Figure 1 (tube, rainbow, N blue to C red):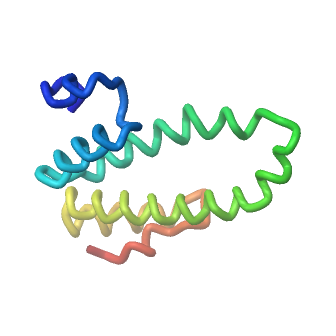
Figure 2: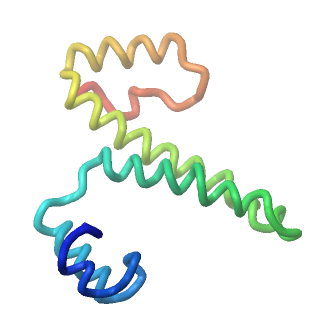
Length: 118
């Protein structure tokens, strides 16, 4: 997107301006955004941006009061999307085998069964 003539004509380097966002959104409306694009984008934000804010400033305890609950909500949503994506990509038999294995050996409380056997 940033390499297109239309984007370069705007004379900007990001999508913070209204014109740049409209150009980006129009492009996405034509071709869509896949789960893997979304997953990569979220990983980047979680790894590189959010961690900085959690370790900086004197009011961190106040900011963290709802963070753990919010992170769990995001984790459940992301796990549901990842599970749905993977179940469709690998097929029903392989997904059921994988989910069974995770149920037997998982170290976290979120079960792959929350996605159903697709």
